[in-house]
Amino acid sequence: MGGKVKTWKRRWFVLKGGELLYYKSPSDVIRKPQGQIELSASSSIVRGDGKQTVQLTTEKRTYYLTADSPNILEEWIKVLQNVLKVQAASPLFIQPDVKPAMKGLLTKVKHGYSKRVWCMLIGKTLYYFRSQEDKFPLGQIKLWEAKVEEVDRSCDSDEDYEASGRSLLSTHYTIVIHPKEQGPTYLLIGSKHEKDTWLYHLTVAAGSTNVNVGTEFEQLVCKLLNIEGEPSSQIWRHPALCHSKDGITSPLTTLPSEALQTEAIKLFKAWQLLALSVGLFLPQHPFLWLLKIHLKNNADPRTEFGKYAIYCQRCVERTQQNGDREARPSRMEILSTLLRNPYHHSLPFSIPVHFMNGIYQVVGFDASTTVEEFLNTLNQDTGMRKPAQSGFALFTDDPSGKDIEHCLKGNIKICDIISRWEQASKEQHPGKCEGTRTVRLTYKNRLYFSVQVRGETEREKLLMMYQTNDQILNGLFPVNKELALELAALLAQVEIGDFERPFSTPAGQGTSQSKSNQTLKQVVEKFYPKRYRDGCSEEQLSDYQQSGWLSVVIVLLTVCVFTLLLFESGLSLVQSYLRQNLCQYLHCRMLLFGLQFMKMA
Image 1 (cartoon, rainbow, N blue to C red):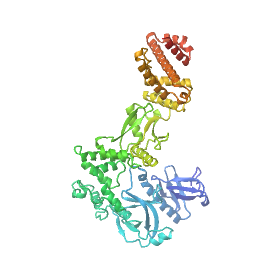
Image 2: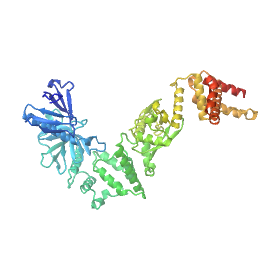
Image 3: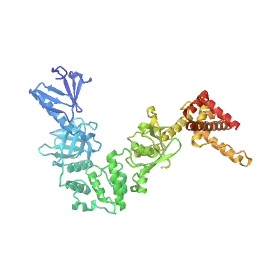
Image 4: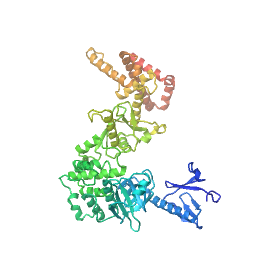
């Protein structure tokens, strides 16, 4: 029942992805639905007055639905209630700080029926989905105080599963979950390592006090978790949980192969490895809980280990705040962590950022710093506005060496950018010595907002001027030869100052002339477009540039005189003077006047 006129309308309903879609008839399901009803945690379903009527209330409106028979209605109510129950838990999956302790593709068997599902263990609940891409689970299993154990085989699963057209390993392993007052659920797993890992985490989530699965370290963690980390417990004094100068002889956690177990023992360098790792990703529950307790107990600014613990605490907080990394650690990050004692710095890494005027600013960052955070630090140090106001953005060069730049998004981490650049450079330049090339970061204008001009800072104006000159030099900004010469002279005046003419005395003429020529040559190469240089000799360019530079000095002196007149004689006198003289001349004629003045002098 719907619409402005409350009449019953017959529709075909399909439940899909947490939404109730309805069509005019079953044959219309291949077309766009006539409407949809979004089911959320705030939705509710209650029985109506009739035996075959149900009332479905959502955030937007209330729907009245009826079925052809009471049995069909009961099936719909049961399914919809299950969906709403699952929806109540769905906010867990959209929170960035909620991460599953385990996840993977398993075969779930219950009441003799098997189904391949994507499983996620979050807290003390096992959620299962139709596929990894689904946002809403098909169902859930409460694990607290459930009986979790391994069984030899699930007696009725093989035939059903193989009959469905898929193949199951004949040597699969089976875990049974038996919640209180509910029937058992069997999980079929293909490898021993995967079975051991799932069995351990499911046992921990069920709160079992008698844990005999996992490594010795994993069993100790489970026991600590059951007593909520009681500080006075004797478990903390177990050798596996205490600091030792000696290396470990076996892996602390379950690993899938002997090769990985051997590598884990080789890489064990305690605090340095931990300092590098917590900036990349965080361990799953309950090891994250144990890690925080361990860092808290060891934090002490008086000892080296205590300083590492304080540094790792900051890294854990930052990783929880900004999320795990997407790329492996870069060469720069590894060397800085191993050689520079990162606990001496709140921002252990640094990199230069280049500007269009040829200078650079060194900016510090940590393993979790995003481009947005990086630019906030840069803008504070240089006296510039935020990118949304200034239009400036951070760019990297291309690892291939081509004249291409890449604009960086604000949510990407700086360490991920450096790592990916290093990897791409290594792939495109095989055989070259590692570390000879590093990423180049440039901060320049990307978008110019006219509405933000009023608040433009002096640094932004200066950098914009140099960026415009760079575009002129590369032929991206159209100017004629005369205007390009004037702009080059103006930039020379800004960067170098007044032009120094050679001494007229014979003794100093040679040295002075050489110095002036060298300065003019540098100015021409830096500020005058190459396409205009090609048709002129060095003498002509020197004469042009010298004349233009001197004219700029005269213009600037004239402006200064007018400014003094403004303060000394008042506004009306200057206005009258301007009307009689300067307003009759164009800018280029004023420059020519300056040239004639210099010739007479």
